[in-house]
Image (cartoon, rainbow, N blue to C red; front, side, top):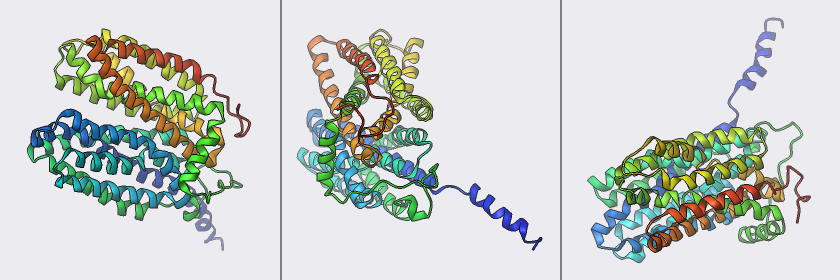
Length: 433
């Protein structure tokens, strides 16, 4: 017996040291979101090749991109409800199949409305069915501790995907043709389907484990049996009665307006207005993406340790200040002040996501957190859509983007005040209505 005791004593040690399946779920989610980011970056690569191939106007092509962005946002809450009702794996595998089918079908298009239908509607719905709602669903199910850090890592996957895929897709479009981009995106989507099937467990219980960091007496939220569409609308109705929902959704509206809608769409033409070469401006925007990864991961780490409201206060305040300064740091060449803006703004690009996801858990409780975040994310996309069009109209009216940058900066500063009005960490149901 004495000879066997060391072996028996070592078994618990090995169990403790084994990788928790939550980290495997997070890794599969990260890989899927990286691929999804590649799908979403493809339209920006296709604009010029489609103009040359079909003679379509940029407005016609941009309409498909606009529809894609809106559906990407408004599909999210319904996708979150579907994940709660039918499971994450089914929804994500279906979404990937939809994306692959829509992208593959574009090789046969001959009219602009084909692009709107396939890339705007079909691919928009498919990518919206995953988006950051997929990440929030995995984090809420698999993690009790380290939620902020993991959400930061998964959020950074979006930027990583664009950095990984965009140069390669651009080379394909230039050297092989635009159809090669569609085929590549379709193949990538189809390849991810068996990866999800084989490696992503639905819930910790399926692996015989508790969520990472959960106490022994932890109990999972009650699963809803309500129709997915009804659940999404019911959640919106209930959340709308909570004042803090409007603070969180309003802040994320400004987040979308001041990032992807404004800088993501108009930074390159704004720099070009100041005489900067488009290649140099695109390089600066890519550098923003590099620092975005660092900033988002660090924000997740901070969210696990500090008040999410105060983090958002500093993020929006600093972003507002940087946007006020932007018209003064754009030159015909890259200057040190321009690089300071790129680093500073890049660190803050989507640092707002981890604390926002955490605050969504407090509005109606953990069981509704993913669907609530889906509606908050929809507000983000509406803000981005408005900025994309509004900044262009201001540029036409006044000859430059200065007023657009100043307006966005002011909204960020105002938002910094309002996020502090969000209630502190209190049980759901006790929030101000």
